[in-house]
Length: 102
Image (cartoon, rainbow, N blue to C red; front, top):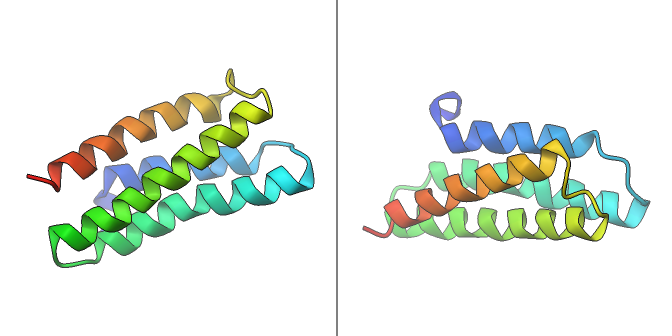
């Protein structure tokens, strides 16, 4: 169940924080897509049967997180809650990907 998937729950919190951020439309649209992609790829990967398939989707989620962090950096929002959450989410994703590599 996704409600028991800690990394997914962290990604939802991050997405919700990103939704509250005011940005120019071109960056806002990109941040919305990237931050939602994290949760969506985690959910899709969670449903896969093999570690290889799961790791693929979890890696895509990490890429979307890095994109989100880049947007926050471009917008000079590195001292926000969202940026701090992104750091925690990144550590969780990294650990999840590494555990699937064993």
